[in-house]
Amino acid sequence: MQLTRFTDLGLRTMMLLAAGEADDRRVTTRSIAVGAHASENHVAKAVSRLADLGMVHTQRGRVGGLTLTDAGRAASLGWLIRRLEGDREVIDCDGADPCPLVSACRLRRALADAKEAFYRELDRHTIADLTRDAGLLLIHGPPSAADPQPLLQPAERTPR
Image (cartoon, rainbow, N blue to C red; front, side, top):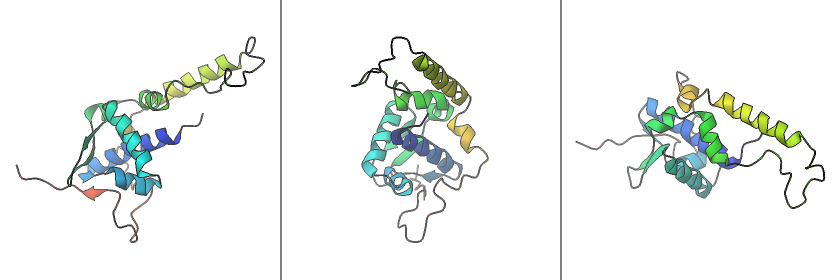
């Protein structure tokens, strides 16, 4: 099963946020887009969906950025991917050109069972599990000197 680019960006965002927490870094939609070689608009859509799901908190402004919520730390990968991918079947038997075998074929059921097994395995893991004790050096490696904005930036603290 291949995940969509949308889901890939959502998962990378979650992992970067978890990695950034370890050393009090903030992550912006722009920095994720630069690091993931994706359009800022595409990343913003994934971030918006993550926020709608309660996985991330977004804050606008000069000291804004994204933070992982408690729900985001605790959610299983299977649960999250199900919501990012939607309820699509692995194969489209009923599409514009329906399969002539659809009435007697068992492939659809076998693929649905395999997809559910895939999700069940991912249900055993969380974003926190993937980034725990890893010293995650970022998915894209350290920022280069040519990159004017590092993927993770030190968080600016406001006086209390």
